[in-house]
Amino acid sequence: MKNTALTNIHEKLGAKLVPFAGFNMPVSYEGVNAEHETVRNGVGVFDVSHMGEFLISGPKALDLIQKVSSNDASKLDIGKAQYSCLPNETGGIVDDLIIYKIKEEQYLLVVNASNIEKDWKHISKYNESINADMRDLSEDYSLLAIQGPKAIEAMQSLTSVDLSAIKFYTFEVADFAGIENVIISATGYTGSGGFEIYCKNDEVAQIWTKVFEAGAAFGIKPIGLAARDTLRLEMGYCLYGNDINDTTSPLEAGLGWVTKFTKDFVNSENLAKEKEAGSKRKLIAFELDERGIPRHDYEIVDENGAPIGIVTSGTMSPSMGKGIGMGYVLSEKSAVGSKIYIQIRKNAIAATVVKAPFYKK
Image 1 (cartoon, rainbow, N blue to C red):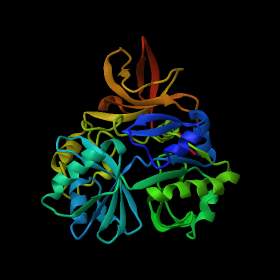
Image 2: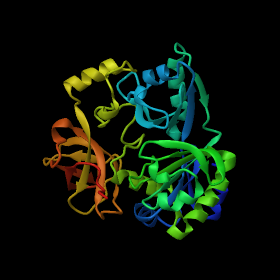
Image 3: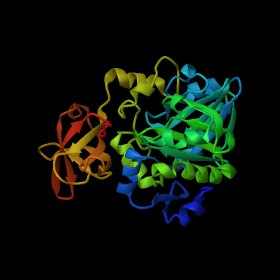
């Protein structure tokens, strides 16, 4: 297991550490519900330094990114970020990612920790004929997610830039917590606002300390991966390995909005045919009508008990106090308001298809 640059700090804080994507990661400190509440109403900090970072640069950088990603990166200005995915050749998804335009002919790709090696190989394969400059920075960089409605106010004293002026999916390269050239990105995986801070491994301990000093008056707390999962699920955000994977198409996963057929990309021809014909199944969001907790891989059935799909993510929503989940069902069963049933052991628990996000501010 690898450690992040902050593992010893998490241990001192009493975090419960678990193996995740090859790293020892803090899953919780004081408990998922309390940590979830901190982010929804105040400000919390996640160490997500296990994520991967690839720097793609040179005159061919955009050509490579356009070929391997589904969204249209030519629309990016310097200081803007874009959610996208890497389609594979067989209709599925290699990974989902965020693409940052750092400067002309320089982009940062932020990928999931469990997919770093797979993504690098996939992109490299297409780069053989394109020849962009590729550097894997994953081992050298740390990433903190400072999330919650009080994040701007709590962190403003640490930087000379106006944090309130950094709009969603934009970023600044600026001073932060006494360190120069830090990426301050208005992105996150919680739906409660805040920032993601990219810095070098030897800088992150100083940043962590200053973040907690600045945030003390705002009740800032460290947050683990368990709350990150309940927060993202309440927003209906996909988790790679659960809701999307090598066998799920971006269209059936509801990622048509980041799948742009105005350009040629990996498997775009077949995905365009799927769009025209319509996907056979769709990723839905649902709420349980009765008590129960839906879990990954539980069967979804119709009123007669016939299988119509599978749960990909599920939890008891800390904000709403009810069972919520996501899953794939046959397209004809996917309309909002449809009644479905989740097979929880011997009981088929009634549920209703809803429009994500579950959590409304």
